[in-house]
Image (cartoon, rainbow, N blue to C red):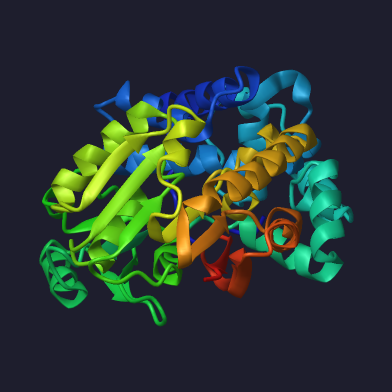
Length: 403
């Protein structure tokens, strides 16, 4: 944990209480951090922009560094003490609160400086650190572990069905929102100062979506063309479906599939806002849904469930919620999806297998296993994006079904 550069006023007790309540819910009630923070802010509509940012960023930063802060704190005082230790380690002005009167700043900083164990210093559970080190190698993993502890950038994907990125940049500048182009990313703009854009009128008009830069590369990797028949078979909320529709210029057909109806309902709303008219949401009810689509797709996207190790920047509580049993179960699901869903690809067509994991056992090893059992498919190319490159971590493999 480095020093915070920004000068910060001492926060009011009500804000500290909100952070403590959020941490209690995340760790004691095992709730997802993003949902807890969203609920906290919704329940306190009178908080101003700076207060909301303080609650969100402080909570996330403590979750990110939870093992380190717990090690430095005397945990019998619970989350209040952890918050106090956070202020000390971050070299922030200590709040004038009775809750922090027992904290010995010098002793805490001395203990912090003496830590040699990277698992504690970088705040990872032993099992996850060991797994990633085994799969990636010590040098690569230590680099990625640090990168995953940085706050995720906010990246916009310009909706090219409605505007161009140069025009959107100008519109945002008129609202005093600064964005910049990203080299190597066709439709991306990076937000230079973090803020909530979901209420922005340009977002509501469908001129952009929020989508990580690495994630945007997956739809491009699929190499779609206008007029094709494309299936996005693990669509979720449909971020990649919307990108595919834009890349196809609304020509052809995108069948967007998921096992959860509410996610498809959300996609319908997003598609209307984006004026993406070539999308057909379809619920996967059973294996027959897949069977009916055999040999029909020019392109198939399999953005499969995964450990999420590539997106720990965005979901830091995943460090504390993941376990090996879940990862093993997920790997079995990945192979099942690859084997069963791949048959929707036409002969001569192509599929992309993708994850937001950095573990080779979920990525290239899954592809190799699939290819060893399905001789009518061949790997064209694959790509790994590591978090140290600046954004989230992803893997993508372009696989062709032979004629």
